[in-house]
Amino acid sequence: MKSDINLLLKTKTEVAKKLKLSGLLKIISITSVVVIVLLALSLYILSRLLSLEPIKEKQNAVISNINLLKNKQAKLIIVRNKLDNAAQIITKRPKFDSDIRTVIAKVPSEVSSQSLNLDKQKLTFNVASNSLKQINDFINNFTEMARSKNLIQDLTLGGVNFDPKSGSYSINIEGSML
Image (cartoon, rainbow, N blue to C red; front, side, top):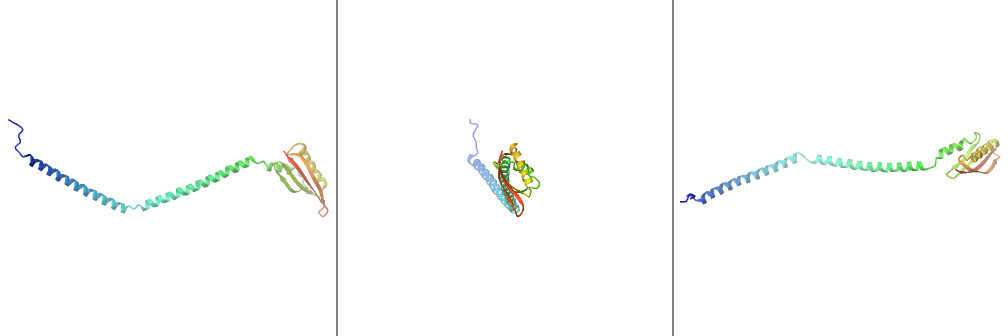
């Protein structure tokens, strides 16, 4: 005898199981659709209530500030570069201020300077005075500078002029710089 004989029809039990399963699936699907719709509606309402405009305005403000900072940074870099270039030029150029002080110190008090040109190779100096003795002192001072090789290598007297109206003498000297 067989012990596994089933007297119930299999088709009715399987149909009942399938109906239960399909009903459960319908309930789950309807519930999930309702939950998704409610979630979408709530997100839509929240997005309307919490507007993104202030956030976008803040974002645009930050972007404009960044652009301004980039412009300032570029200007600062350019200025810094110009300052560095100027500093390099200043360190390379001759120190004319100390040379001019040396030259002016050798001019007697009653001698007035008409013009002074000084560059790397040449000194040209025009002076005037009412006294020939002061002109002589001026020439002696610059001759001594040339002999001692103090700033001037050689000295050339361009000429002596006399102005009878003013009663003043003027001379022009040229010298090669060391």
